[in-house]
Image 1 (tube, rainbow, N blue to C red):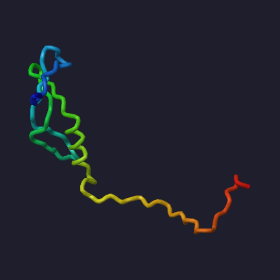
Image 2 (cartoon, rainbow, N blue to C red):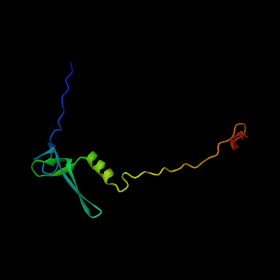
Image 3 (tube, one colour):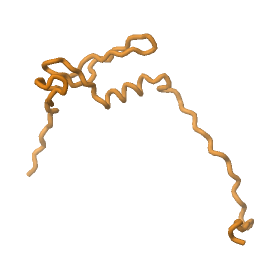
Image 4 (cartoon, rainbow, N blue to C red):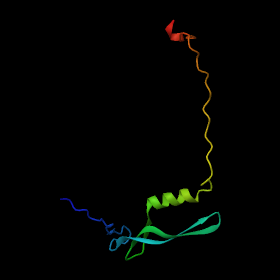
Length: 99
């Protein structure tokens, strides 16, 4: 029989103060975009319980960067491939190396 165990993120040692532990938390993320302050509530991060160092979740930062991109939601234009005429059946020409 196998048991399913819910895995909680473990606290890891803080690389800045060495004595604290980084613990998963949700906090408000602040950033500036084109001169405006943007706040994102409930943003995942790792926070040291001693020195307060914060490390933000890489996937969440990547998602936020994509979301705040000025082109987000706009349709993308496909680049057209150069049109090459197809040879018609029966019009086989030998390649230069087939002489």
